[in-house]
Amino acid sequence: MNDRDTIIMHKLFEILGLAAILGLLPASAMAQAPVGAETGFVLNTFAFLIWGALVMWMCAGFTMLEAGSVRTKNASVICMKNIGLYSIAGLAYYVVGYNIMYVGVDGGFFGSLSLFRGNSASEVAFLSAAPEVIDEARETLLANSSGHATMSDWFFQMVFVATTASIISGTLAERVRLWSFFLFVVILTAFIYPVVGAWTWGGGWLADMGFQDFAGSTIVHSTGGWAALSGAMLLGARRGRFRKDGTVRQMPPSNVPIVTLGVFILWLGWFGFNGGSQLALNSATDAVALSNIFANTNIAASAGVVAALVLSKPILGRMDLLATLNGAIAGLVAITAGPDLVDHQWAILIGGVGGAIAVAGIRLLEMVRVDDVVGAIPAHLFAGVWGTLAVCVAAGGSLFVQLTGIVAIGIFVFGVSTVIWMLIDRLIGLRVSPSAEQLGQDVVELGIEAYPEFVAVPEADDDDD
Image 1 (cartoon, rainbow, N blue to C red):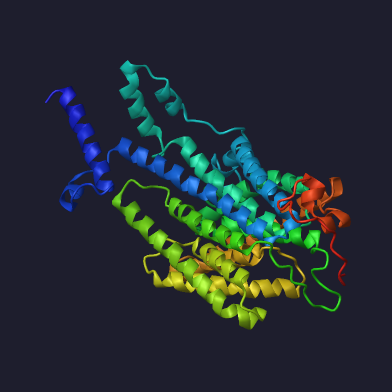
Image 2 (image 1 turned 90 degrees about the vertical axis):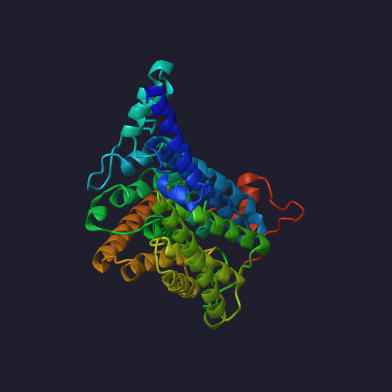
């Protein structure tokens, strides 16, 4: 067999391997068809891009959820905040965030402070190789890669950063200044989140201890929740939310169908969030694991909905649709730390408890007079803590290590966020003026109304403190 025949046979085996993965060959052929290095590289890269696109679509879900949850006079600002935060996250994580999180961490606290993330040297050489040396350049690329294109990994990691920022947006809606929020997002996405990621996924000190968080119950969701809680405590509640007599004034959402649509979009995006965290799709092992992750994600979300549905009336005094929708999100957040379970029954427990925590958390925040417009703190922070601890029961995690990670990340994120919020308040102010809050941020900050057919009328002062 000459060299040309060898190359043809090699390509044939790679094609057969790809066909096996796509289900185009019978089982006997699949068992005999290995996946070549280049085919695996293509499949892994494609998976990163598709899962990343699904997670990016979660930004639309957050936008719908938040825009429908606020009053009509603030819906346009929500849209501006969400497209702004996604864009800021993309730039900040490209300029410095990724390198802090992943480059040269080596068991420490943060990685490289070098700027920008780009293609590897072997990728650049491959793309510019002359025809006569293209095969050699390809072999070098495959030998030096991590099994996928460099920027596909950057893209997948970047969309997680935007998710963290979206959590804060909903909590502080209707009273935080637009530019103050954007300034905090810059620091969150360029420094706070990357440092947390470096400790864990980047191979830092928590990773060395054995901390487990498969897709980010703590790393992503609790980080956003801690920053949101800090901001909510410093910013204060919306005018009229808490009355002097201790009662809570309900501020109904402006568009319940849009909120529901947003939750369904988030649910869909979560399959990319958790499934993509398998970080590979080039083997039968990955395919089975991915199937388990999808199933557990869906089961946990469903259990969260049912738990919230059952508990909302006993805890909140009403059959609450918004609490039920938050139950879905809490179930998804809770399972995110360990969605690769083989025993799917655990997903029911983990998601159901997450939904219950979300409902109880809404009531707890009302009692301590913390105003969270969309219930993000119970759904992301409280349920995220639970999900991270549940790994000890369902996936063999160490309770000491998991608690260490939860506490360390909580102290760091809450502490740094508090300092940053206070500095921003001193520099440019955090809260809109009372007149702007009454009239609405859409008119005051943007000059464009989401619902122009409605006349913007300042709300009458309520008996608030």
